[in-house]
Image 1 (cartoon, each protein chain N blue to C red):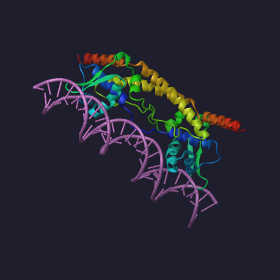
Image 2 (cartoon, each protein chain N blue to C red; image 1 turned 45 degrees about the vertical axis):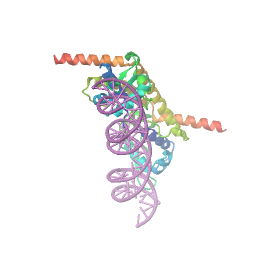
Image 3 (cartoon, rainbow over the protein chains, first blue to last red; image 1 turned 180 degrees about the vertical axis):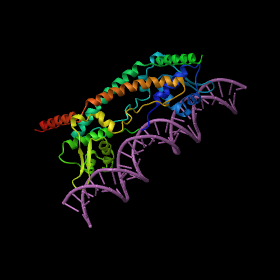
Image 4 (cartoon, rainbow over the protein chains, first blue to last red; image 1 turned 90 degrees about the vertical axis):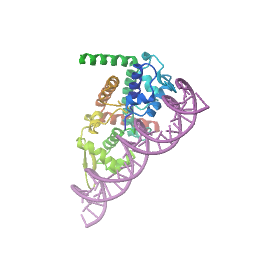
Length: 147
Length: 147
DNA sequence: TAATTCGTAACATATATTGTTACATGAAGC
DNA sequence: GCTTCATGTAACAATATATGTTACGAATTA
């Protein structure tokens, strides 16, 4: 299974937008992400529907963040993307009659649910502002190395 | 992406084998799992390579568990299957030059690594013997309801 | 010798993500 | 008003992975 990289993509895009004055076009963002402008529109459109970004058409148009960076957590972005499946491993049959399979499902589901809860909790604790800060730190470090 | 259900499958198969006297053929296991005998051989072959089961050919042949149920954890089975990817979500670029993307990757990787650690820890705590016990409980419960 | 069963390669199918093309819609500048 | 730029979306293609299927070889037992 190919892994869903949209959360990674929108984070990348949003941070570039945060560092940039004025709106950024799908074309530009597509170059940043190494993908097609249409893919950018498709994905960013979900964030627009969630009220996190706005899009303007025509000259000098593009995408703009419309929320406070400190209030946008990874969890919220994950939700905006439609809460895609987190795990690449799962049960063979979701509602089996076989009692053996029911035991297997119960064991796996419980474990996965616990891991998912932890993951979403961590996602809720990390905001775009946190990532922007981390980026600024890396940026400063690289400049220090160069000098 | 389609989810990998092999861990679920081998657990199902192993528990049926544990409840059954003598070896079970790929044909029979395939019927239990609702799949093809070749798929069973392919997957059980990985467990054979890990020393968890043995296969005998010819008349009265089939698959047999060759390990103590109490020593076979979900973790060990996961390893026997080649430690397939656990998450359906991931980074777009694994080794980006872009500092922004590096920050994004670092944040996601840290979070996913923590969830994976928890999951594998739980996997290590659950053995086939535990699942067999759980199945026995369900079995007894259903009989009680019937009476 | 025939029947059974695993071992494995090769190929087909199903599903999901991502990429691409095409065209409509709306906004800004000339 | 017309052109240009940009998003909005549908439709389709490409890609990746898991699973399913067919075919045949090898080993074991009746």
